[in-house]
Length: 357
Ligand code: SF4
Image (cartoon, rainbow, N blue to C red; front, top):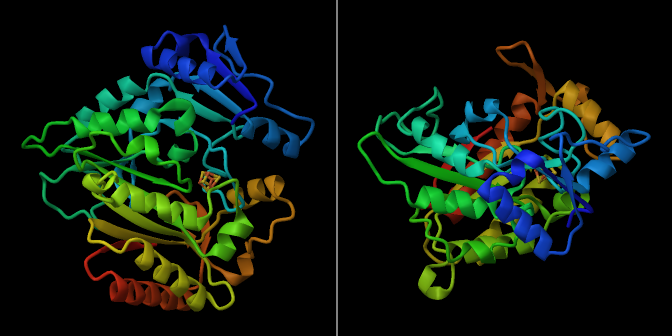
C-alpha cells in the first residue's frame, strides 16, 4: 500500500483514471490532486530518503505521446507496452536502475485503454527479434507489459493488468496475426485474474530464483513458494478453479552462488512438484548482468548490498550504441546454460526453453 497517492488533473479526466480513483478511495488511501499535472515532493534530503519517499508514492498520470511509440524488447517479446513505470518492490539488482530516470516513483497510466487500442496498429508487425518466435509472417505479435513495473505488485491498486488481459482476450484473429500479451511477476495475488476472459491470449509468467537469492536480494516481494502457488492457480484448468492460462517460468537473475547447481536443482524440483499437471508452459533463463550506470544507482539505493557486481570477475560486452554491460565470463556462462537446458528438459520435456541470455 502506498503512503501517498497523487492523481494529475488530466488523469482524472480519463474514464479509467476515474475507475482507479474509485479503487483507491475504497481502500481508504489519502489522495492528492496535482492541478498542474506535475508530481512534486519526491526529493528527500539524500538519495536514501528520495528512494524511500518515491517507493511509497503512487502517481496516476497520463502516459506521454512517446509511450505510444512502442519499442522492440528482444528476446522476451516483439514489443513492450508499459501500463506503468516504477515498482513497489526492493530488488537489490533491480532491472529498472539506470533504465528509468528520476526518483523511483510508481507512475500508472490513466490513458491505458487508449494505449491498448493503439497496439492494434502493431499487430502483424515483427521487429528483428525472432529468436524463439519463428519467422512466419502471420504468427501472433507479442506484447510484453512488465518491462518497467511489476504488474501484479500494483494490480490491487489499478486493475491495469486485468484491463490488458480483457483487451487481448477479445482481439479477433485475422490474417495479419493478432496480438498476445505476456506478463511476469514476483507477486502471488492472482485471484482477481482467474475469472478473466483471456481466451488463451495472455501468457502469465512468474519470476523465480533460489530461496537464498530471493530472501537476500528481493525485498518486498512474495516468497518463491507463494509465487509458485500463484503460478499453479493461473495454470490450473478453469473447471478446477484455476485461470487456465498458458504459463511461463522465468528464472532470473541466475547467479553462480556457492553450490549453485544444488540450489537451482532444488528450485526446478519444486517447480515440478507444484506444476504436476499437463499445461502449456515454457521457460526463459536470464543470467545476472549490470552496467556502470545501473551499478552506481543500485549502490546509492542499497549501499550495504551483498550483490556481487565486481567488474574484474566479469566479461565486458558492448552494445551497438557503445554502452557496456558486465556479464559472466564465457566459460561460466557455458556451464550454467548447459546445466539449465539439461535439467529443465529432464523435468519438463514438453515445456520448451525460449532462450538463455
Ligand atoms: Fe525491480 Fe522487478 Fe524487483 Fe520491481 S520486481 S524492484 S522492477 S527487479
